[in-house]
Length: 141
Image 1 (tube, rainbow, N blue to C red):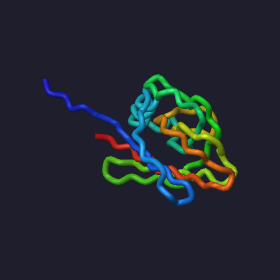
Image 2: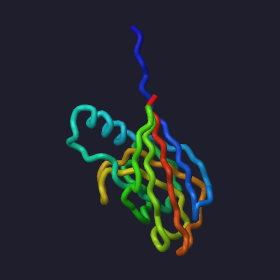
Image 3: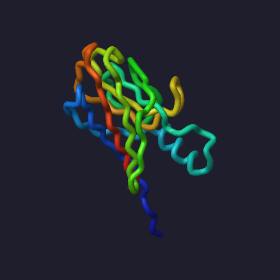
Image 4: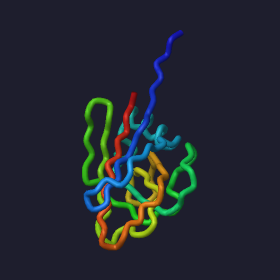
């Protein structure tokens, strides 16, 4: 018997003050895959609506359901679909989520909620006057 495999992968582009500082892959966590399956049934769970950043560098794991040390969670500024790729964008303005940022996640609520993806990356020092924008692509293939 032949089966098609459905994969979800992603990657982020992180800019500070409109200058690209990092591009990193992400992990679609188990809760995120369960979220996608539930949305295929109905809309009982809310759509992804927020992105969070944090300060813990513990490796991302499939069992993660939250960031290790969230410093800020912001409403998505844009969500677009092109073919099999969805792009989420969020901006963390001056004075928001400052410090040594090492992780990010996508959520469907302003607090708690379902986490779709989590990634950990090399330290980005976000100063109090810096604006950070993250463009996060998730591809289904």
